[in-house]
Image (cartoon, rainbow over all chains, first blue to last red; front, side, top):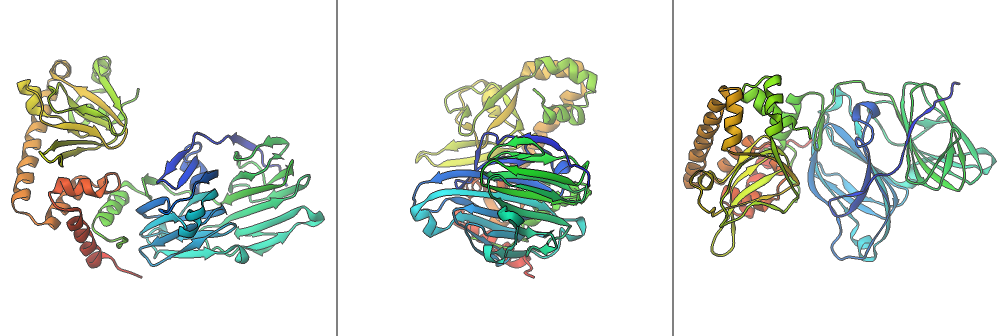
Length: 288
Length: 198
């Protein structure tokens, strides 16, 4: 297996608020374009942030999506979601919410009401995963994936575990169904351990250091930093400096044209115009 | 700073060549304002038309009770101005402020003359723009006098396709001359007719 080298290590940029409930550092497309990161077309990272107690839950009000999937990975805090296709639920620490917007939904996301009343530390990733052209107008669906359902692979020598959200690790397949081949793992590793990960060379591969620090291929990567790998080999190595949580993303590029505007990601300008018309004329449904 | 929308406007609509654009580029005046800041206030003479390079502007009047009546929104590549105040050099009775952070190009007679001296076609385009604006105003007056809330809404979103995602609903209701509740009813009824659940 050939070494997959690091293309760049990106430090978290100035955070901005999405609605009033998500204080995020944008990594995709802000620091690497949609085309480069294909099929991962957006990544907002809410690094640990303390939200004070409130009776009015903070979040993002009703907005549409078409043409891709939104994946929310909760590390700390609880978030509640509802959409116009009838999907919805609450996710908390270790859970994942995988919403396939596809042909279009309206949705809203808020801190859970009960959680808001006490507030506290909040940490999440929101990712947009592109859909192949043939699936962009498929029916919306919603996968609530609790931490209990996420497959865990215990590593040898008490090195920790790999939580497989999507794709597979050592033959263990994660619960999320995807439209194109990809792997999405949370690595929960103990301090002072060494782990190698191998993915097909052409897969777009990156990681986010959610907790702790490690060296990756010998280079130090601090908490909240994002590592983008080149597509020049299969294998990279993580040696932990502390206990760590690392989100690993590796997916086969869809390699189709991308036309994106706000909450719509399609293949052509004409499809974007149609998305706005359909949204304006109620084809995404209604949500209070 | 790069002004892709303004450049596109001068080249595609104004008929300028790349070389002609470079010639007038040094004369372009830019103003940047943050969300909530003003380009025009009541009582002040308006000296410019504002071409929106980026962001959203709103043009409105305040009535005696302090209620905002929105006459126009301007998103990318739109032009907004109190034309009466500019032409007659009289104090404006209107306000222009930013709903998003805005980059605007300031257009005045000197600039129009400068562009026209480089390419005479631009003067025609400027006249066409004015005539088109008047055509829209007629349509708007007739809608405010007689169209249903639904007709007003559909005409509006056809003209500004992405505005529902950028501007609070109460402002859109103000522009349409309907209550926010009425706008919400229109959108709900449309989704009932057009949404096909799977």
